Length: 77
Image 1 (cartoon, one colour):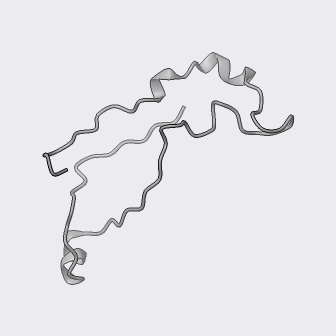
Image 2 (cartoon, helix red, strand yellow; image 1 turned 90 degrees about the vertical axis):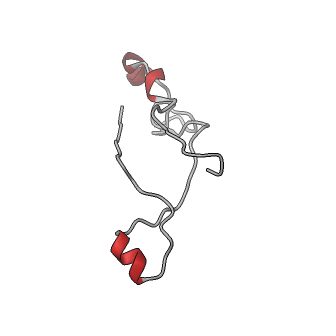
């Protein structure tokens, strides 16, 4: 950011799930539907687009490197 680096080290949602309740959740939109509170997006979810390339490719195409991915992780409940 313009104010300096931002470190995102915690997701706000995974800790809120109660695994034992998932099988008991009713469909949200239709009686025989498949969307429940457990598999739908949270209100804090967003969308974005990202172009990931090597530094060499960016240089060849005259693109300015805006960020560097230092680490990543995935999570599924």
